[in-house]
Image: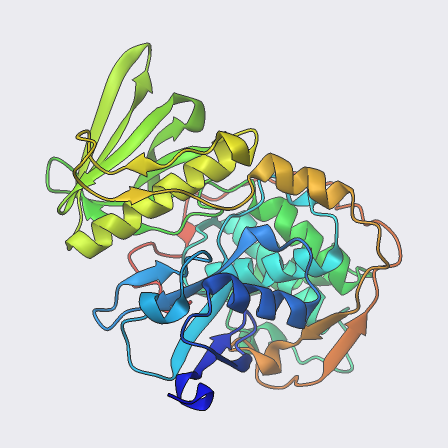
Length: 384
């Protein structure tokens, strides 16, 4: 067989909805694709990111860097995948480079737009204003009509009341902020929210009620509707198991053993949930990657699936970031015309990070409205 016949065409959709393509060999591993995208960006703090794909049954997966791409993909060629944030930084201020912060900003903007990042009214208005400031700049009455915010599609539920509050904050509080500072302020507010970093996995609890499971830097979380009903910190999580469509969380609560049981729609969804749990536990809980062990999905050694997270852990990533010494790369910002949020802007802006930025000191928990802007029940879109 010729080498040409062994080549496979891959397209990776980026966080601003642009795409890059490349050809790989049939034995090319997932790490090559991830490195290809990171090299495209000149991204060094790459451990927070991953490549996601969807199989023919609409089940999402993270591309395993250690395995050949072709063996993981079950769909027909050419392959289409998405570059996304996989592990959300616990403290965005510790991200070293503006480029990395910008990519996290793009992910959070998507999370807001698709209803994954649930926001009380005051926080939603502030986040929306930060996006407008970052991508539109200062308000100019000669350029911007009275209802200029109505052209921005920021939230799944965007009321006139919310738009008016966004306008107020944009015009009065954020004036003069460059894109990088507005983005940083969005990150600083977003990470205080309960759903920051949560990729919701739908399931049923032991009563048959719908629940959404997720993993954050703090631990394992359970949501019902828009309310977080459970947080089990990583220090209190012993292990995760699954069998068929049943997922088990085993830990300790108030010095007593705790076993939580949930049921997914398919065995494939349950296995994906388990692998996400194992990877997040390793990334956030372990002090160093040498402590990571291969785990089994079953209590019986020779039964079930075996899996090991193969990357660096959060503490190692932060330490590596602190040692970056290079000249910061130019950040190529895509404005709303190049994404799905705004229709009139289509040019690119080049920003060089010349000095450290400090976030605005805002009272993120003041004047919070009880109504949430967003909806975890939305099918959060396969490729989002």
